[in-house]
Length: 541
Image (cartoon, rainbow, N blue to C red; front, side, top):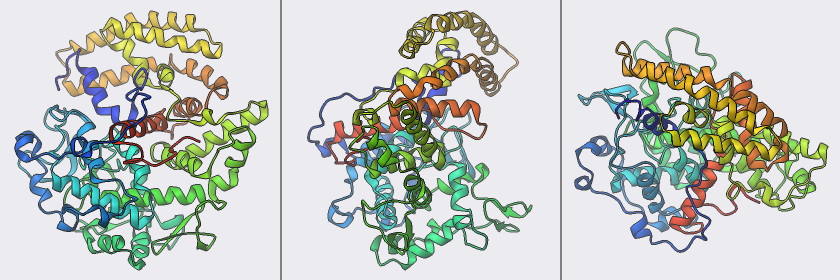
């Protein structure tokens, strides 16, 4: 992609959109009732001839993937509770345009075909076209998801909207924070995998602990994972030793979680199974924190015995008594299953404690002020939070200032009207925004027209400029956050997440994340049929 003034935004948002949608209002799906799906047309696969040479780059490595995972399994082999394979193919082909380069796509081989430790986006930094969606490629991802889901007791249908939003299920998707592969594994997620299990001294790493428990299971899915040793074993460089995350201070420590080694969770043939297995381990870690549910030899346990769905939970959810308190406020259909979805799903993006903190604060403020709820106030699928993007998401706030397109500026000015919903001064905010634009335009133009700066340096300068002018968004966000408990839970979660990012140096993620994946859930239901690729009662009471 060219780095011109007109296309800088295209590059930037292609690069970030799958993880940090800062659009005006996310409304990719309609409210139509999902109908029956023609899976043959919705989830077709491609042939190498259809794709062209630009999208063939995984074919050579794909041939090395075990036929156990690259081969086709029947629906009876994978179980009726799992989504059909067409769901994976549909997501892969609808993540980003197939015939356009995207900064979201990387490779773990250079132009000479040599394996890399850290992925590349090509000589121009513009990324690549998505890989060819052949049947073996779809199989390799689908079978990995199904086996890890079955073995670790993770509902695949709950994961698909998240993975659609972030990676499109591609092995070579690379996010802005070097989030990698099918599961978009972040450095914090990978650290969790290589940290001592439960953080207890003398315990093995979480990876080794789970592999040991998986090996005890009689499930065929677990047996297949154990048989693929490359999914959990590594070649440690000569002169190095594999260290635990949090204890890797020695110069000779090999740190698989570091950005410089990101291809270990992207390159084939170890992946996609390795990436999906690590994603599953991270999921189980968050699940244990949120609910107290542990994993033992293929089974879920709670308080040392087999867990039964519906029983009282421990962890954040049990301690917070969220279900009981939500029901007392009027959300009478509140369930532990949906609260678990909220906390664990947001944990992937913002850290496991974030969902618990936001939910606790929201409930507490509503209790204190005796502001009652309806079940509809906790419906991430049907409550739009995109109208707050101008306040919560820097890319949206910046877009009207930095783009030469006057229509984008006009859109931003209109978006600021949302402040009126909370009794805030929209006119003052609009005046400040209008006064800022000439200054931003002047500085952007000077950067883009500079003959001394490379394309990479220009991007860096633009990034610094965004930070400089973002300080004008912060007072608006602070004022909105102060009144956000008056809004629905989805709106509050987006605003609270955004506020934490500007007040806590350790916070991260994409404000509105739960709304994004709920929208993907709705899209899958509309395009593929109700509960074909998706779970029932997802992020809504």
